[in-house]
Length: 456
Image (cartoon, rainbow, N blue to C red; front, side):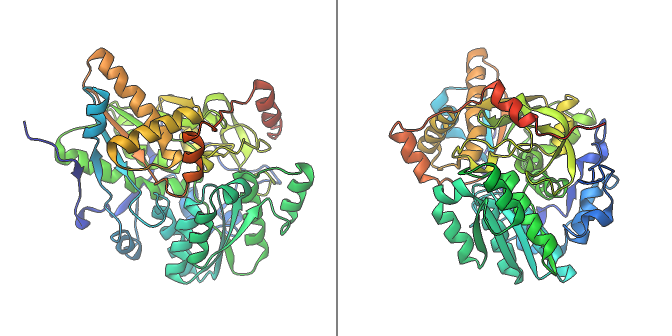
């Protein structure tokens, strides 16, 4: 039997020419976005003051299965794509498992993550429209870094609202964002009306992605020739990230394997959806039957303990309402080190797929368990992973150990979306035994869920 190489690469010519729109094949389409004031279905004209025109169209698109990637975006992709599919032989050996473990590695660019796949697309559409400035939020800082890179490349001004606790935990990430020419403001700030309101309502709070989104949208909609760009949650972002899964599918074809289990960390859904979407197509069309697992932090368990209902995508109630799994727009998670997963809701497409059973399982894991897996992975595979994607590593190890018990030779795929070099404070706390787990009580979660709008 031919030995499968450690790294399976595609050629530049094999970079996909199209993004895949999973909405067109779902059993049931997502519920429409609703206007934050009228609660009526949103229109394209409603979205255009917030997003660039082409991105607004992509957000609403439920008919085109494949959307062409602009040539200038594909040329930029060639600087760091295709990303490798890696066979984790050393991890398999250390675990003593018969499972074949693979990870799609998205950490091979300066942003350190998959976020650049959408950032460059969003900046490109802004440039084409003649937009001079963008605003955005960022949690752990990977999205802020990626968009700063993209805006720097196209000569677009960028203002980033960074969740306050992440800004304090990851000062070097802020430094990288500023190096690319963007400005960074800790959120909640006193620069916006919604920021001042949140600070008044929740004095001394550590911030949340929902709050940072509100501030970024406020600035975008009140500043001439400015638009807002989002790093996760929205369908346009999931669309751009499908390049991850499309490349992974091609790589598996080259080696004659196919994943039985596909695992991704779950915050707003961009990495999870990007990795899974093409394989979900196989499942929906009866070609294959992979098992999908979404992994989220126990401190912010939107899928495992949230409610599937309409909610605001932000804390300040300035964005459209989406039907999704949510802990409530007023829920402010604990300041865990996986800042990129501290979001109260989940992408509508993934929420619907989970609700109808296509996305098989959501699992929450504790912070100390995640860092146990991260340090183990670093020792045996030689990569220091980011806290976010270490959630997927945790469950991949757990599933591989199940295979050890049963003797099953399953193929496991997970997304490794970032590097942990800006997360050394977290690693140091874990190594010193100072890291603590936080699992919200039902009462605490109900307070957040109570902030969800009452719908007729």
